[in-house]
Length: 247
Ligand code: APR
Image (tube, rainbow, N blue to C red; front, side, top):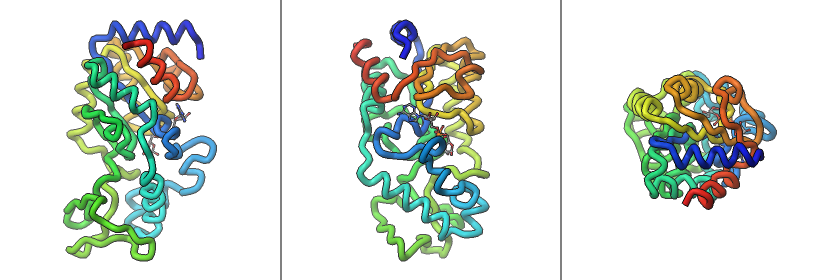
């Protein structure tokens, strides 16, 4: 990682008035949760059109539940890593105002963060595709022989996460826009920047005059578009270092 850029990033964060973070799957890979794209990514094993789209789910919920069960099993032992913990410390110290995440793993909250906007929902509840009743996953036993789970109204249950072809909950999206407009420094962490509409948020922040510090193991489509301060490396390492140098 470029030491000068790193030091410049520390100063940007120290002087920031309204620091926010936008996170993607890359912040959770060090908790054992695979990313979606790249080598060994989830989408190289599960076709997202079949397993993670609204139409795929409705035409074959049993197949979609093979992916959902795989996600739940990867979450059982997943713990927040040093990257999540570093963001939670920044929030506790009043430096980080909000984290806008695409992740559905709940690890930001597990690390102790409270100001988290889950734009793609989460795995913590199931929702009925007929009556919209929700069920906390904690109370349910997901048996691979008995999938998909069914609501007492007869409707099929799905995780309360946003599938492809579904829209982001308007309330969450407008809350994210509010923080984007107020931000002067944005930490862009572990996202390929390929999925709409979240991938528009970094450029919106830049257009409002914010500086973007991008933490990723490789450059992304956003690196050039948003002229980010690109810090090459693992999110857990860099965020943990930030915490040591900031406080
Ligand atoms: N540290 C930092 N970055 C990492 C690390 C790491 N340890 N490991 C992987 N990355 C980076 C990858 O280089 C990649 O740029 O994280 C990014 C992960 O990209 P994706 O797998 O595309 O995940 P994400 O950007 O969150 O996907 C957005 O797409 O499939 C949908 O709904 C799904 O929320 C997801 C959305």
